[in-house]
Image (cartoon, rainbow over all chains, first blue to last red; front, top):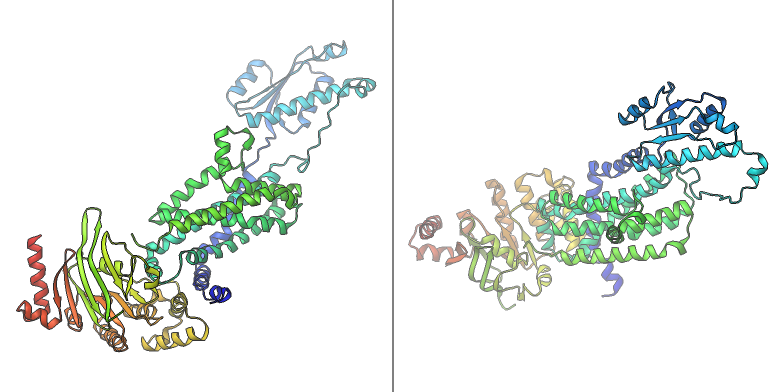
Length: 377
Length: 246
């Protein structure tokens, strides 16, 4: 038999066709596969805001001069603070307000502020920030320092300001306004694909086992590889549909830039989609029931969300966590997504990640096929 | 395969500490309708599953259509058909789609597949229900669809595990007529059943109890051997005796 005839006569084709028919008929699952990514994207996209703005802030202005009011205005202008309309009257009041959590920051301008300024001495003001949540505090700390510098610049004689010995010009590339959605949404594509593809696939084989159809299926001469590939391929399509929905919504709702070529992104996604499905399939061969499959699936998802660099930068993680992250396909896919979507990276920049993902896909698929035995033992 | 369709020697299967099948020696001749009888848990399903390559025996040998099923299960699978106890087809596929799927898995394509499906639908009288979802069929119809799927590739040997359980008498009658036609065409059939009238239709029978073969022969020979009026009487007596022994 020629190779072409063997391929045309492979049991893979009836398997593929059967999976498509069943998928089309299962309207609820189909709706979930399309609806869940959309809902999740909106939830994640709106809820995950790492930049903290409008921190409730109390002001104690003991100087009550035009100079002190200018400083308060500069602090308000950073956008990091939302000043209470009612100013504080004492330091005790400020302390109570911060301890009780009513405000998260306070600005204290001493009575000597304007006088010191006029005399050419360094004038001091104080900004107290509740730094229990470092993430929330860091923005405010930066904002306060920025406001202080802005005032200092404004008060210096023009000639002195120009002659400042060192000037660092910071240019935030790719996301100049530092919006977290720009960074988060491409990540969500990867996380949602992992989540849905691993879970869907992990129940695919056990469902046949539970319904009793697997027994009838494995007494036919279909090979393990045909069976497995026939199960996987229809969901590759599902993966692409989900990805397109998230990309589209990300563009329309969150105004996420899409700088790179979509063709490159779609090509680079194939090994990731395959790898995720293969992980699900492997889970499917390890468990006996759909409930077990779901549990194991979520167990696999957790490190994917925490250690892949989706929410927390991997650079900040301890070595062990970095190594675990390096064993996750999602880690590499996130790099591809951010490179292509945000930095317009070409194929030259992401081929190592594509290579690693292809190896993952081949490896997990092989493991799944080897784990699957055509027996009921 | 020289006249023998199935041959097992010292076949044994242990699940944990339970011995499901104990040194079974079995010989089924080509073209026979062969009955596997015994109470629940006596090892009938285990035997069939081993012969189909669905279970690995703990020890012993099994040859099916002349091929060692332990070494080459895939070669055996192209030659056999199997109908499990529980309906094993897809509820969410239509009658036609189930037939297409199984016909396809057995290597039928294009016009050959279409012709075979049309023939099968006629044989099991499901033509008018081709577009119906398999899950909405009644018990008898489901059995006939399962039989059609299991014989799509015209197997030499057909395994039927309690094929008529939960099927009404008229449907059972039709089912046996179909079995008769398959047998006449030369198909060897090994089946399990709890109905003694069905056992009477087999050319040869074995009784299993607790994984052991306790009686073997044609229905007439067995009733003679035990000096009983009917197979049913033999069955009940054997079960009582071995039950007391256990």
